[in-house]
Length: 423
Image (cartoon, rainbow, N blue to C red; front, side, top):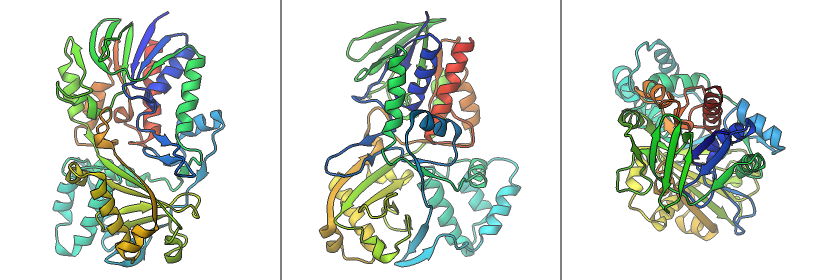
């Protein structure tokens, strides 16, 4: 019976483990963190009456693999009403109102033949002052939603995303962590072994043989290795926590990893005494603004007085040295601006806060990937296994219609498992 070692117990790693163990492979999963799940991170905090999603939160469309697993596991999911409002300089606007120049933007996007960056596209076609608001909107979307640096991000990928944007979104009332627990249970029932607090440090490999040494001295051997750790970890310097040394070296793969876009995000959960936003706009779910923490949303249970704040993209670099008190101060000022309240009123209504900066998570170092000009070539390199022995998986290795999602991670887990089974 062949042994497969898997580094990372997130969605991709557990999906691969589930499939391989069902085919009779011996599977050992090594997770660096103290808990499994990776960027799916549901917290059940007694200070909050509902689960907190520190990481992945929504199912972005009718995603076949994700929904099939939820059905298989009997996990409840429900549609999210995508009611959005924009707040600019204190004035509220329905988000569905078309911005000036939007039709021209879409026509230009459809006419692009050769890929360029989003920044170059805007400079080439929309540099005039009359398009200032449109440029800001495109930049805000690319940076806030895709977490992308517009000077690196592919405009063709952005076009593909906008053209295929699905109206349906779903929320899991019991938390995304249910899916991780289901995968874990399936893996263990099929004979998998899962270790937490096992930081992969060294990988020695040759055809059909792998030896992995962890930071705690543990050593594991197998025939195959699947690496599902994030680009943020694989791009770390030698002395940094989480860095993996390969022998023989794999410079072409690590160079390809550098070509992937990998964005940053800070997510804030603020619990209040009451859902005061219902008095302002009682059917809004998403609030988009030009405040320092620009994006906020409510929960599926609109009466539950929790707001989730989202700060994504290159701007997160400005917050690397800020502590939670400074971030909370920015959040309070942002909400005061959005809802036309005083800062003291917002603070007085606040009961509990949780702030998650994914750049500070040593075994993630970011949030999710975005498409650069060189991404397709890089992913093709990374998804070609080294002598059918070392494999890469994870949402960053995905080239389908749902990038940066749990679906992307699950699909790559499936693909790498099928590749090993067939080989």
